[in-house]
Amino acid sequence: MSMVFGAGLALPGIAPFSSNIYENLKALYRWTEIKEILGAFPVKNPDISCRKDGGCTLLADAGANKDILRLNDTAAVIWNCCNGEKSTEDIVDKIINDFDVERDVCMRDVVLTLSSFRRKGLIVV
Image 1 (cartoon, rainbow, N blue to C red):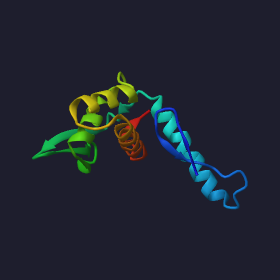
Image 2 (cartoon, rainbow, N blue to C red; image 1 turned 45 degrees about the vertical axis):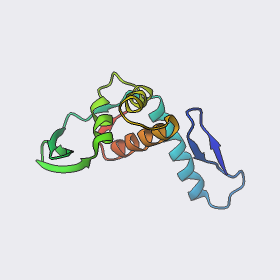
Image 3 (cartoon, rainbow, N blue to C red; image 1 turned 90 degrees about the vertical axis):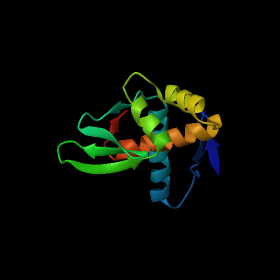
Image 4 (cartoon, rainbow, N blue to C red; image 1 turned 90 degrees about the horizontal axis):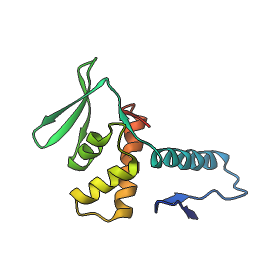
């Protein structure tokens, strides 16, 4: 069972009387996180540096001088849009204009990428 969120994302539904409270809490956390990201204007962590290495972009911890994450072209565009001025919707619009992708697929992927960035401490929403 899933419920549809306004932006076209299918989110896990919570059964009213599920016997597994852990699964219900995980679903609620994911829904809350997605809701926050959809309304966010993400900002990069100032301690993270960015550099090109061949065909990809590398994010590194500036203080520890160690690579954290390797980004493909699409993720690099999302990263570059995390300036506190662009909303998640603005980022989706940019990706749709730069790449051949449907809006609902793009929205899902942008939200998942921003969620991953947030969990790794790379951005603040």
